[in-house]
Length: 267
Image (cartoon, rainbow, N blue to C red; front, side, top):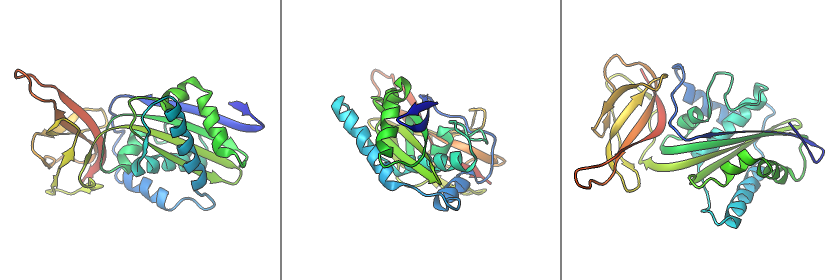
């Protein structure tokens, strides 16, 4: 905790540079997160002006450091808002929620087209609600070496700022992402038996190589080089989609890269 200019400010951060395992399968996790965002608990609200100002201050900082400007991304903002809401609703302050879900799980639930190399997350809680709230939050993160490192991270391309307010307290989350590519349409929240999904993705200078579905232990349970995502019969529960890209072949040598994407529930 920090006592910051007469306001109580709490900060914490996470920097994750590898794909995430999905925790124990819970049917409908993504749907529950998206429902929470669309219908916040009574009395909670999104201070959009604060979110916008934090985003502007972040890119001003990066401009001064001669770093690329971060693009805002809706899927990341939804993940950030979801966590800020949960922290206020369930009265906790941590990167993992009471269900054991972390930043990667939230992004996989809310960003239905993104393929990421890496993500990072900064958190803050502050009370009371003050006129210069965005500046106080920004300055608090800048003054903390770990949070500052996320803010000026060279590997990040996008960010989502999500804040929630309830009575005198504000929770804010910054979600940073290194976007490797995007799918041309959203992965369904659920795939039923026999249903298939055609994968079409842009992944920078890599060529499409295939897909994997990983379970709660980060074990590959299904894989294919086909552009059609169709899980084997008998595979049920929540799984994370990984998309594979192949580098340009040079002297018969190439590298396969794995990027984590959305989760889906196989029924």
